[in-house]
Image (cartoon, rainbow, N blue to C red; front, top):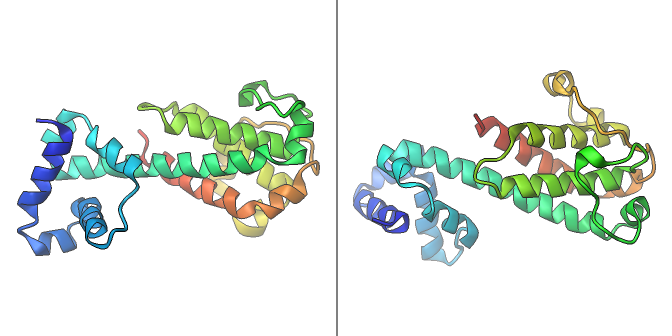
Length: 210
């Protein structure tokens, strides 16, 4: 049986138990999915597609296993979306264009020069996170490195201590990406909502990774 068909059958059977749907966290996604069909406010189609592609052994393991996998899918999707939004914003920034020249995307985080400005680093971070979020099996070490680079930029621009004091993350950051402090600080400050949204999404995603 195809995964999508299995999902529909599982929901159909369980919909007979209203109390279960309303109270059991394992069915939160299906509750939202059903409500979306009723109201027209559907869950993003890409999330639905990825849920339909969940491997058969996970479906066979039961609702709790499926719910855990769906949570990972949604967390990765939030990172992908946040990274894409930030990447597009950075691409339009004069600071990023001056930092890399010819309006070309930056290379991998590992290859950034020591003179890279904050916006160029953020562009590279966003590209890395978007790419990892699209993978079935992301590289946790690269996600952590991108997260650390994001935190470094926030620190360099004076935003980290102003809003977040997380000693655990401070202590965990062992690898940094040098940036030219101040080169893109104004852009970073003006786009800090996007940065914090992505940071929060990455932290949630990391908490679900093995």
